[in-house]
Image 1 (cartoon, rainbow, N blue to C red):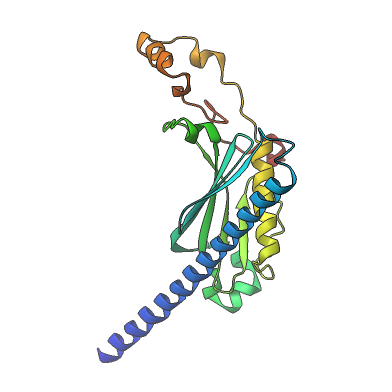
Image 2: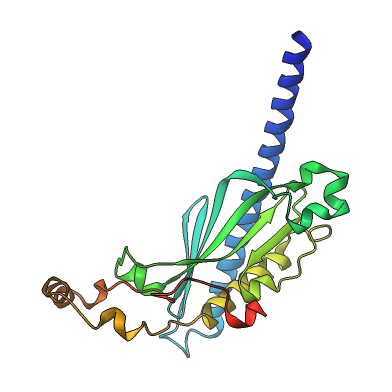
Length: 229
């Protein structure tokens, strides 16, 4: 029984220390993303804002686990999850020699990227929808894997070799911004709003901004046609 207790304590320590190491790597990565977003804001303001005053870029540090970057009618929200995850057994990375050599490499922290409309925050439209356009998975060695839509999915994913640094963080950030700019607001189906109640119109008289809005309002967020090919 003593050996069983001792083994359990050792497992607790090894697993706990592993997860804390991954947490620290993920947290440090989020700081790199914050720095890259602030640098992009600074570059735009110094090189383009004078000639294009109505098109702005704003970085907002919400807290230690979240930041936002707003640009041209869009907002990207980067959120670090505080828990640690493991790739599923069916995931492609689990078949790599990199993981087979060291199973602990399959445990990752996660940073999610959500896309919202700027007006959703500006006018406090709390019912508006946003979409997760990507997530970055980071292991104990700062190796990373990106899952996401279009431009994000095209980021070179070699979990065996890719390590996060200033350049790779910028590539992911810029890919996310480009995707958001290309992911346009679609006109909702006419049938969706052909009827309206008296209560609805009274609310709209108070503020035209109360109508729920999203880039794919009325539709499930399926892969874009060119992604499904």
